[in-house]
Length: 275
Image (cartoon, rainbow, N blue to C red):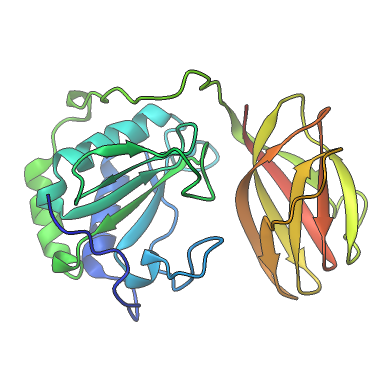
């Protein structure tokens, strides 16, 4: 086991070693680069994201029209490869947003997977990407990762996913390709500041959605099960002129959810999974 670095400082640009590793993983596994360097806080938190260090990447297995395999087992195969070669590739953390109830994580200072018992990520469960972090030691050395990776790579069919301890009610259904459920631009017009709308979703108990806000004013959006009290939380925060999105699990009641916007905005809702 090795010490876990986490956030150390914000870099000024992308780091060559991490970018090379991501390119190699895209080439040899059914995933695509969903984002590396970016200075921001963790979603829903005030602490800084490791993405700002240039040592973190999000890799999605989302299928067509995107470039991923559309198959969670392909993501598992990738994660098994990364754990197997964690020391050689200087892997420090892997976070898997898909399994219920709250995803799972592997870290170099534990050397094993942990199934989370409380919400640790805004995209769990059901997120179709993994989060990867590498150590500072070779994060600027692209040649190291190309050379090392070439020595580790085996034919894809030699990797067999290890069993994952999922809860008994793991009955999540992917919506592939993602389905557009609502778009205020084509029906209803922009939300007025302080407006709540009832939005038809699908016949399910919960839906994992990507919510996009095209903001006309500063504000926030909250989505929840129709007929239930409005929770005191925000699903998306926005400023005037922003086009911003976030993924969330939203409970569904009688095939509908309620959506509140504190500031005027257009809203788009796309389904990625249901439960």
